[in-house]
Image (tube, rainbow, N blue to C red; front, side):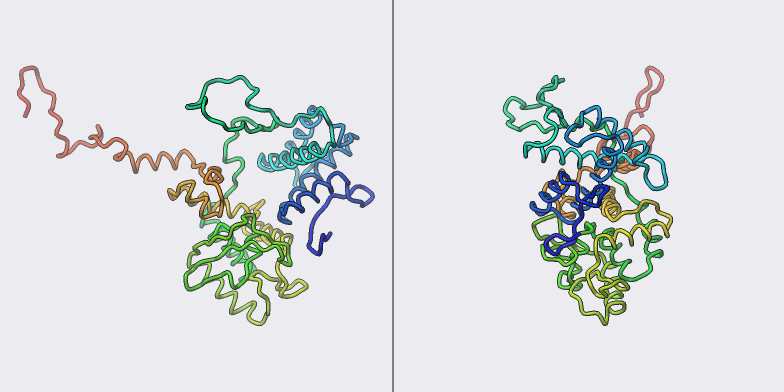
Length: 379
C-alpha cells in the first residue's frame, strides 16, 4: 500500500480489508515519523499476533495476560498457527521483537481509551520488594522504568545480537554477491555499520572519496521511503575497501544511469530508481543462502561491525558515536565478549593489573631471597 505517495504496510483480515485497530496503531507510527522499515516490522509482528487471535477466536480487546502467555509459548515453539518457514522454534530475539510490538500496540490503545481495561503488560520495579539500596539512592530522582511482564530475566546479550564470523564469512558474502552494487551494499552495513535505511538513503553527494568519509543525512522525501533513524546528521569514516567497491560500481554498472541515489535498481523497473527496503532484504537474504549463512539480514552486518569494534577495545561511547547513537548505553548490547576473549585479554594485560613478579616467571629480575636451611645467610 502507499500513504501520501510513499510505500507502507498494514495488516488485512480474511476479507482483504485493513484490521482497524492495527491500522490505527500503524497510522500513529507514521505520524510520529517512524521509518517505513519500522512500520513494516510492526506490521509483520502484529500480523502474527492477529493470526493467533483468529485461530483462538479471541477478540483483541478481550485478551488476558494468560492468553498472552499462551501466544508467546506458541510463537516461541513455532506451533500452529505460527509455524515459521522451515519449521522449528523461533530465535529469542524474534520473540522479543514481537513481544515489544504487541506491548506497544496495547499501550497505544490504552492511552486512547481502548482495549482490555484490566490487562497489565508491565511491572513497575518501584512496587517490587527491594533487595538492597543503591549508592545515593536517597537523592536520586529517577523514575523507575517499566519492566515487561513477559521479559525473560537474565537473558544473555548474545541471544539478542546475531553476528557473522567477521571477515571470513564476509569474504564469502562478497564472493556470493552477483553485482558490484550488492557488494557495495554489504560493505555499507559491514564496514560502515549503517542501518539499511541509512544505506538506501545515500546520495552520491553524501560520499567524500578524498577524505574517505560518508555523511549520513536524514531525508524525509526519499522516493523509496528510506529514513535514517538518527535525526541528527553525522559522519562515518570509511575504510578503503568501501570506496574501492564504490569506484568499481560507479564506473561500471551505473556509468550510464542518471540517478542521485547510490543504490538503484539494475534489472527491476524502474531502472535507476532507488532500491527499496523489500528488494534489499531479499538481496541480502539470497546472498546469505548462496554463501551458506542462513537467516542473514541487514542488521546482522551492523551488529557484526559493532561487535568487532568492541573486541578491538572500543568503549561504549566510542561505539555509540560510530553508529550515530545519541546515548552511549545504546552500544552496551554489542559489548558481549565471549569468555575466551576475556581470558585472552587478561593474559595480555595481567602485567598491568598485577605489576609485581609472577610465580611462574622467575629470572634475573626476580630479586626475592631464596629460602635455605635455618642459619644460612641469604646470597
